[in-house]
Image (cartoon, rainbow over all chains, first blue to last red; front, side):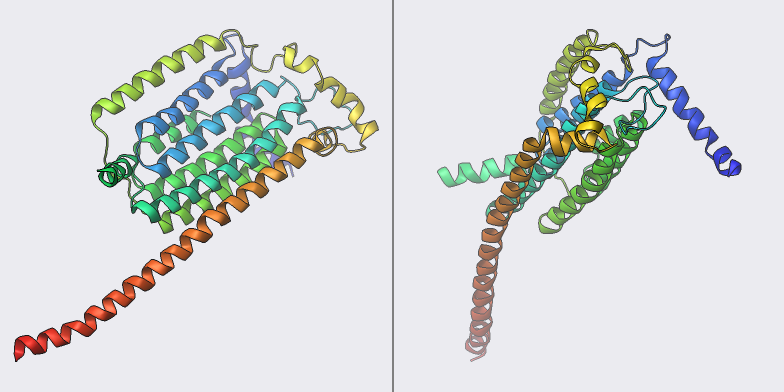
Amino acid sequence: MQGIVDAFAPLYAMWQSFEAFMAGPGSPGLLGYWIVVVLMMTGFYIVIAHDNLVKKIVGLNVFQVSVFLFYILMAKVSGGTAPILADGIEKYANPLPHVLILTAIVVGVATTALGLALVVRIRNAYDTIEDDEIQAVEEEEDT
Amino acid sequence: MLIMGVMAIAIARIRDLFAVSMLSGIFSLTAAAAYVVLDAVDVAFTEAAVGAGISTVLMLGTLALTTRQEKVTGGKSKGTAAFFVVAVTGAVLIYGTFDMPRYGDPIAPIHHHVAPRYLEKSFGEVGMPNVVTSVLASYRSFDTLGEVFVIFTAATGVLAILGRAGRRRREDEIADETVTARSDDASPDKDKETAS
């Protein structure tokens, strides 16, 4: 048993250094939020800079995950555990953001499915999934 | 989380859509690992099952029905303009984070409104040790009901869109086949004519 625990010791040390890095006095404690901003902006960039519709939906997903991470980061309490009640534990993470994000993940997948279905339909109608080509086809039809 | 950042940028760069959908699956799985580290085990479950699993399957299904390769489109000017917009927005957002409470701060305002009440009373009121479950299924059950409606609407929408599209596609194919069959019929005659 102790051998197994020892085998995971480096991982646990990594986790602890991660926690120290995020909350320690050396950093301003905002690194997590900055990573969230970078992720969000990457998703935003994919959505506005790419013409491929599938790529746009992947970008929306990245954006979405960054919002989820933002909520979960806010729910974290230093020294707390997962919000499952047990004897002898005083501090828990905030359960409310977890609930909201649980709902949001499922709704996100539902909207993704709908978006991808629309992409398939557009492909059937226009024979392309590139935004600019679709516009070219539309202009051709107008004239 | 830094790995997630690298992965997101890779998604932005790669043009092979199959690789992109695989990467977005791995991205979701990494997010699930991050949620475990951040004490959100229920969210991690959902993300791993729904985000990494179902999303990837949906994405691959779409690729099978459409195309695998993203075309190189849009001039460099479009990319630069987009990058400029993104950089400005990101700078504003990072400026906004300076007003946020520190990571893991127990005296942040978010931890002092309804959350302590849930943590203290939910076991007596609902009888479930997992607070996330009791909030989801009891205190916010109407929200969850609304979520079910959303999923139902999405499923209906997908069926409505794809059902019709599939039928039209099939009709088109049948029409194509009859056309080719006719041309097949016609071509031997033509050959005969040219031969005679």
